[in-house]
Structure formats: structure tokens, C-alpha cells
Image (cartoon, rainbow, N blue to C red; front, side):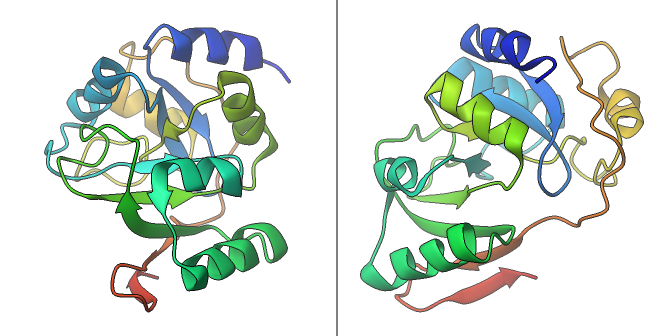
Length: 184
């Protein structure tokens, strides 16, 4: 995969890159490097108390950063592995920086159905933050040109994956032991 090695190297160095995910273009950073996550907030001009979506590549990785109930795990297994839908789950966080969670106790996780993202996470061996690649309040980036318009030369790598035809993921909270749709 073109740019995979370069992407992994940049993320390990604490850099932020832009990549097409399974939904829209995302600003990616290693979720275990606080200064890299802080760069994402700065680039997006996003309030620091607003958590970032975290991408994982397996249910095992998800269980390392969030507390699952039997019901939320069954749901995650169904939508992420069987149905392969772009669904983000909000769960109680564990073993993840409070910089990622915006200082809160929850984490928003998604298993992307994008070969490049999955391989990137596998090679990095860490979850990544991946909010939409736009300045807060600007339209969601659905093309590399839109990412360039917002960030210009402030990113060391923008991978042009073509035009996105999907919308941002559905977000479902499992905080009260029953699913509640936060964004459809």
C-alpha cells in the first residue's frame, strides 16, 4: 500500500497526517502520544474538552481502551465484524490518555472498514485518534483538496484517497447499559 510505511513512521514520530477513512477524511495521530493528540486539537481549533474519535483494528484492541458490558460487546461484534457498519461506540474509557477523552471518562471507538487504516493501526500497534480532517465549524472534508484548503502545509502528509461518498459514522452511547443514538 502506497504511503503506508511513511504514514507509520510519521505517526511514531508524533506527527499528524490526513487520510481517507471508511467514512470521511480524518486527521490521524497515535492515541498514545499526548503531544500528537494535542496537535490534532490545535490544528482543528477544537475545544480541548471535546473528546476525539479513536480508531482500533480489533475487538481485542477495543477492550484494552474501553470497558464493555456483555451487551455492548455483542453489539460491537455484530456491527463491526459481521455487518461492518461505520458505527462509533461511546463507552467508559480505560488505559487511554485523558487528552484523547477531552478530560472525560468516556471514549468513542470505531473499527474502520478501510484496509489502509486497519493495516496502519496494525503496524503502529496502537489505537489512533481520527476526527474529521477539517477545522471545527468548517464543512466535513470529503476530498484531499478540502483537507488542503483547511490545513495547507501544516500536515507532513495528506493521502489522496479520492472523493468520499459516505457520511460521518453513527454514534451510539452504551453508558446507561442500553444503546442511545447520539448521531445518526
